[in-house]
Length: 339
Image 1 (cartoon, rainbow, N blue to C red):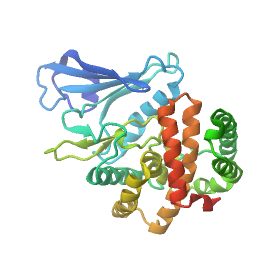
Image 2 (spheres, rainbow, N blue to C red; image 1 turned 90 degrees about the horizontal axis):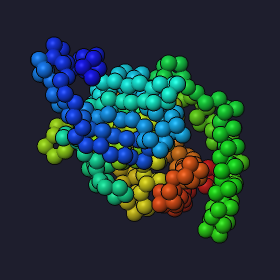
Image 3 (cartoon, rainbow, N blue to C red; image 1 turned 135 degrees about the horizontal axis):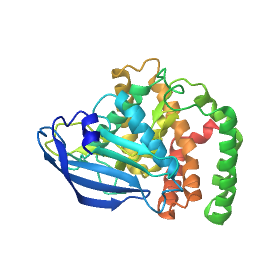
């Protein structure tokens, strides 16, 4: 612990004397421990607490790639980003032999909080703050020369085709399970989507106006400053990051997670703020109209999300509601026209 904090530049002459568990809890796929620290010697500016994140024991091997992916984000990407977007990481390691991993992260418990209790949507101001930070993060990696070189990797056209083939197999079983609970209109939409997937993938394979995306950007993966705290929104949980079309994060946040009334009230406002923030942080050649086109295409892509969630045994409480919400967004936005 002492060595990690020294590498992080927050501990000089002092040393960690005692580590105490303040709190611990399980999330869906990980185990979170809040640690209290006591020091000996000079420790001014050193953190009084830290977050230790490890694998949930039930999913340690089945979801080992998620741990590997998140450790890679914090140890390879986070330090190259503008400060104040993600929690600081003081140590991270993934062991390929045992599949054991850990992250030692900045503890934001006292300064930040989650916007709402799941599944309540955010207020307008909370949503604006969240989307502003998401846009700043996307802008930092927008068409970055390191994409696909030292940062992330490109998915080839062949691998994309294999992924669609895998999805189609999951969908067939999903549709069989639902029976008459999946209407003929929705079945036609899925079949047309699978048939047109190669054409829809051309947007990604253009390798233009892409960035690092979060992949699980619901509002409960953002921490907002508490009242009276002058700080920025932070993003966390990076086990699904990848190079992709950035509007995928926006569509997942709004079209998949929010029912129509809330989405319709905030959608246009948030897309405007997102675009304004991109431009303010150096993104050029990306029009507001192109953002709308990308957003509608991303909403359409997210009809796959409930099927993927079902395929890995996510509870129906999550995937069924996601299915209903995203289908209503597809109807509202006329996304079927894209097929």
